[in-house]
Amino acid sequence: MTVRFERVERESVISTSSIQRSVAASAAPADAAEHAFAVEVVRPGLQLVVEDLGRPGHAALGVSASGTADRRALRAANRAVGNAPGAAGFELAGGGAVLRFTGPAVVAVAGAVAETTIVRSDGPPLPVEHGAATALEDGEELRFGAVSAGLRAVIAVRGGLDLPDALGSLSSDTLAGLGPGDLGGRPLCAGDVVPLRGPAAAPYAVEPGATPDDQLPAPGDTVVLRIVLGPREDWFTAAGVRTLVEQEWTVTPRSDRVGVRLEGAVPLERAVSGELPSEGAVTGAIQVPPDGQPVLFLPDHPLTGGYPIIGAVIDRDLDLAGQLPPGVRIRFRPVAPDAPAAETRGD
Image 1 (cartoon, rainbow, N blue to C red):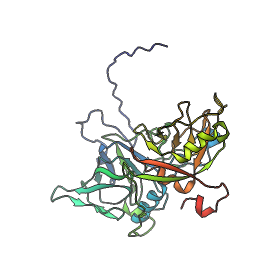
Image 2: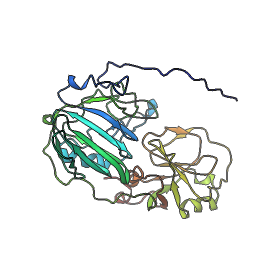
Image 3: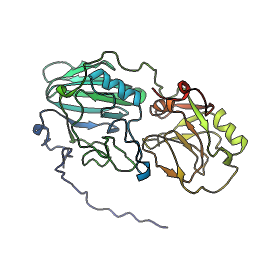
Image 4: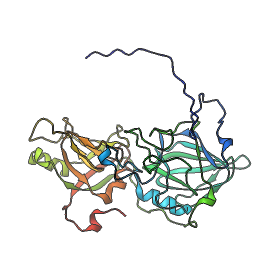
């Protein structure tokens, strides 16, 4: 088919929901003053989304669990500020964001490592310790530099986010367009205002030093992900399966919350041509398109697909998979499906 693109004028939409986008970047944030506690997105960085631990149990309705790409980081950040472990926070990919707070707040940053500072109107910037609870005053900004290790930083705010849920969760499913309030699963934009419940709403005391101490990879590093082969490894030749587990794969810049697109020197060789009738897929599934270059599914993956799945990353390694920046190399290591729970289950 031939496609012709036609240029049209940009549309402006004004929302009256609790999360609003400014019509123009220069417009004053009209909603920040309406909430005693809130976060205004001054700059969203590469991608800024609202995420909790997801909405499992709705696959029969065609709804993915979604949720944060690094569950351990979200739990750690929430523990650091006294929230319930699964409370929703912000997931920032690649750094570069600026968040302005209305009212006092306590935050913690876990996951990917980036230089993070608090910018005040009456003094020099203050450094933010990774994983530790940090207080901000009304009008102060939380600023993130570029990420130096890992990919996604998780920001928890004491008391949590004051947003209406979608199917019992505040997670933003960027593929399905499902999320809290009127976000519709989209990433946050400059001018969006997210209401907060306030520090007094937190159920627990602040817990210091709650961040995981696992070292996250930087571009050029090599990581090992454990996988269980199947269910369709028989659609590949023996040489193709050996290529999967013996060759290094590079994370490409075309990766996102839907999946990590990999590239290897030798594509996976198929024994069976064609496609399957659509069948279910899980987070961590390694699906192989016709070009033989695998795609590792992340939380916003499609629930079904017709490309064969050669294996799946074990649950315990999924958080690491969600932290792989472009340029990282991967080696897959097969484990037995009946391996001990400690070998295959996440924390």
